[in-house]
Length: 509
Image (cartoon, rainbow, N blue to C red; front, side, top):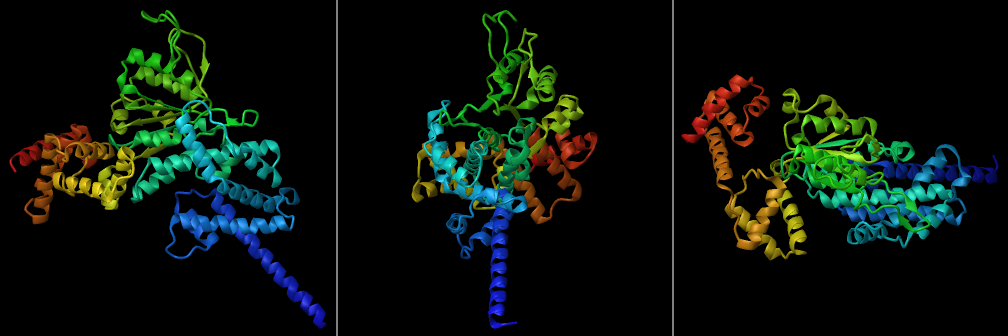
């Protein structure tokens, strides 16, 4: 082999190695683009892509990713290679995803400003000042016009989902991180490639059931899903076809009587009943395409309404009261309850066919007690969020005042029966009065729990006394023998016996 031939061989091998490294980089970016942004896999991939220094913040890591990708794409553009029409097969698929990832992250601040403007603007869609720039960029990468318009709408959906899940559900505990990840999957499925190719306009078929104690944030979770649905973009008006504020409709079912509830949900025709002097559109008629109806306290509705809601879920149609004309529902249903649905199903108070149509996914929201046990700093995160929402940016002195009042008045072991909602009210009361006085009944329950824990630590209770005390506490909190039976795995008669023993034990303490 001549020296010149050897030189060409070495250069060719080096170029091949560079090309392999380049495609490995792009494939990693494509994996990151499809990963859940609230999951650990995405976090790990971002570190690999951006090469951020150890100890960097999440914002610094993402910024390093954006810069590194932009550098690679600028180099491709300089060489005339940043055009999908030059590629086919798997390489085209990878670059397609990389270009989308790049353009999306170039405009996240613009999307955030649009979201904030729409929140202020209400139900009238806001004009999108940067739409032409994004669409032009997509066209430059080789996307046809129809594709570009759809992906622009997906960009907006992605940013809304991230914005409302991150800002609406604050907390760094393990259970809250898992909740945010789960909510993202509810909007985009666990494999975004599936969503992007086939399901972006079919998520209405996937209903969601939210479970959890009162005050855990089921409404905030529902709103995050409801404000994150797909909304088409209309280039002719330079706006999206709907405002996301109109796309989410929430109602508390427990506030209506059975007869009035049907009218509120499905509407009624003039003359359908006494007092029906004109036609009335119900929630299902007012819901926008791709919108979400949030049915809170679904466990409080009777069988007749459950049957009608089942028809909506199965056939996507409903009938206004007094009408035989079927109307189509094209939105998504999210429902919530704090009731024990397993007991209601067993007792026949909640129809099984309705439950199994309703639960495409079931999400249980963590209690504040669980969150504080997992992460002690959770209280600081929540207090910062509550105070900023109530009074703007709070000073360190004001934060400390609230923390000191809570430490003095409820102590570190308070079990927060009202969860985050109770904490918000506690902060409001401290702002007004400087104190938070726990309700007498809740204080008694807390004192009983503290007494039982102390006896356990001292080792002064036998096994029967310990079981009795636990059953008594459960009954004080949940108020039914069925709940105690289910949570202790005792039959109802035995649970009742230990509840009565436990209540007597706690009373005599």
